[in-house]
Image 1 (cartoon, helix red, strand yellow):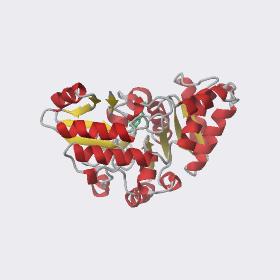
Image 2 (cartoon, helix red, strand yellow; image 1 turned 180 degrees about the horizontal axis):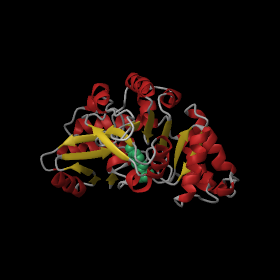
Image 3 (cartoon, protein in one colour; image 1 turned 180 degrees about the vertical axis):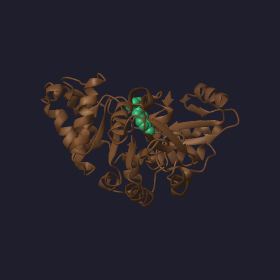
Image 4 (cartoon, protein in one colour; image 1 turned 90 degrees about the vertical axis):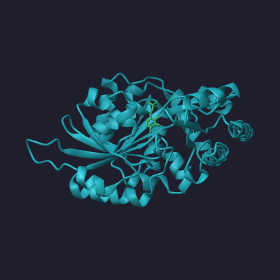
Length: 330
Ligand SMILES: *Cc1c(COP(=O)(O)O)cnc(C)c1O
């Protein structure tokens, strides 16, 4: 089976397992795990921020990150299919007392004119004030679309002038970086706080980070423990992340090339594929998924007429070519 359902499905490579087995560890709740500290310092530096915090999941990283910029009773604005409002089971409301309003963009992009209308300044005792705007880069449910840096800069300028913060869900910001050549620091510079994942295309089994100011990270450290996310000799997992940063970032370009190949084979538009996610329209997505499975290729539906294919570390060039011929035959 060639598994194109998600880039979360990657398994650690032998070299990654070796790095994990050899990791120096300590009790990270005591702040004494050298491997976790190395990972946190490295990722903070990559994005040009003061500090970072290792978390078990990207969802927890988002919950912690958003709550550093939005207080209970305030709102965050985001695109309608953002992971924070669609795929975290209401965490920001359930844990943090945060509400949200959304704008709609077919490619998950920033829409500044609409945002200006949506934005609610703090007027005291009546309307829910907008405290932050959240962007997702790349945008998962919009097919791995990259958000152009110029739009992000305009957004940050608008938010700052309006007294609001910017959160970036950068679960796949690595893909945006590789696809466009934009330095990670430039993405770091347009956000007050970010959440980034090591467990998607980078191929680590577990792990995400919150990235931001020293104050934001100190606050997130408290809330991580409060939520039961304080982990002990977790350098074993941080070592997987460090290994991924050393070996699995530049190769994302291969995943992007494979995604274009699959889009073309599936009758989609390869030019609409920015990164490693392909969404194709099929009148009956469920039956397409079933027929692909019978032919040895696992794909997923993301709507009644939408099929999603995701390339990743465990899909070789040969796998991508074989999957392409299966999809072409369907
Ligand atoms: C996967 C993902 C996350 C985090 O998911 P977890 O499964 O909790 O690690 C966050 N945002 C986006 C856009 C994602 O695709």
